[in-house]
Image 1 (tube, rainbow, N blue to C red):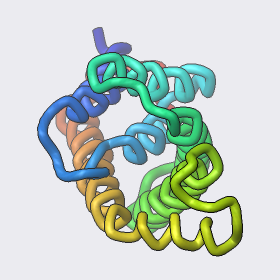
Image 2 (spheres, one colour):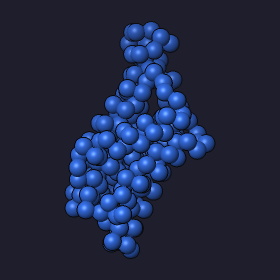
Image 3 (cartoon, one colour):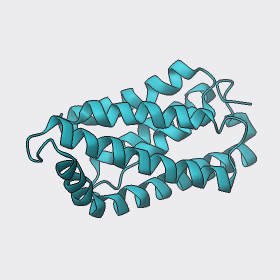
Length: 171
């Protein structure tokens, strides 16, 4: 049972996307960082957040920028691998901020590159990024909220219920 603990946290986080929430206030960045930090098997660390996202997207619907969203999640999960030696407040905060910024840059580039709303010029790209700035605040807030909840919550569970530490986590 304890081997399902980390996957359950990630799947639960993904399913919170189905609840009403402000635009872009989601656990996407936290899921990737958490999986990358705690799962030994890198394939599982990459596959689990992607699968959880896909599960939620089955209910939410698919969109034209999914490749960019899922691609950024792969990179963010890889950033989580850098946390495998231990999550501290400092490196967790840097990873969360960096993941949020990367998600903003990649997904807004995807909106510009794969859509027809903005001209395919430098000015069009800058307009696309400018239009995305109001959503970045929610992306960052959601990332901080969910990363804090997942990382701190899991560390507390490890502290008080050591039996919950599955063999699949990073040591």
